[in-house]
Length: 128
Image (cartoon, rainbow, N blue to C red; front, side, top):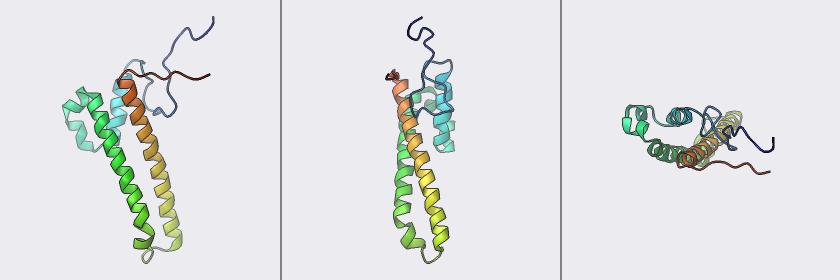
């Protein structure tokens, strides 16, 4: 056989590990569950967001963007605001936490974008 005969769904780079690949059975259900985990807990109580994943993804993207902005704002003022209360080793640990959280949020934002594209019919085509 030449090429990919079985055409199993492909996860694009950055696709969330807990989400089934696009076109796999129940992929949208796993995507909605993952996206809801990024949002305020009260979002689970709004049926419209469960019925319309694109609306949920739109809100999740805004929420993750706001978290990133808040984190970056907190980082910008942390050293001057907390230097008198926290020692240098603690500040270093704090900045490590901020770095880890920023990376997590950037990955989450990428995952949300990929899910949005997949919900709208876009599919990843691997490059050779």
